[in-house]
Length: 217
Image 1 (cartoon, rainbow, N blue to C red):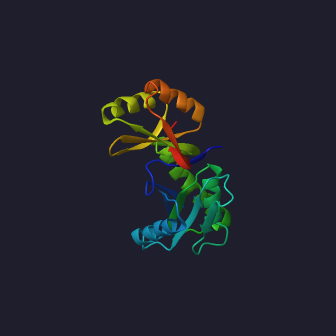
Image 2: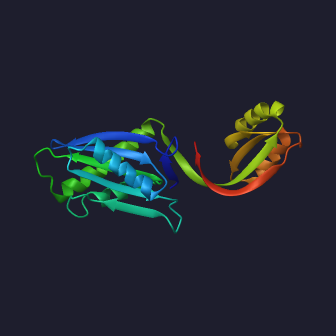
Image 3: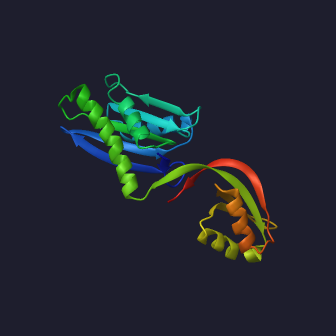
């Protein structure tokens, strides 16, 4: 399963709500890349819904294959294991990384029991993920090789367009003496051949290492 996250970079957000026996469960799904930012998102939800008693959370930071991936959850006063853990499992089960889910609960007067809480908190997160996917707000996260490509300003627009038409992922352009494209790719040899073709051999790729990038399919 590929790693997925919210489109739009850090701070991107999707909201969803479900109701179970008159209790409201509001899920806020936020793109983040650090524990401090994830905890700040929880605090923001707490401030926005100050009248609610529970603001349960879960977050996954880093690639699913990385030994330093961070996974945290918090039941925030709900019975142990009935909120944060099922939320975390919902994120992981869908392959979501670099995201925090915060579910705020407004009690509706009817006790749901442990099983009911597990289902409700999990469903709230899954509903937010479904909403993000239906809105086209989900991208894959992949580790790719990075390169720069320096081009004369007069040629940069045309060459960038031709590269994009050939499926090359361009992360951005810096403008100085030259226009310098920042490119991410998973096949250096193929990329070099494309660049040679569209520049008639007049430009040279410079390697920058590796980076996790958003890839739209």
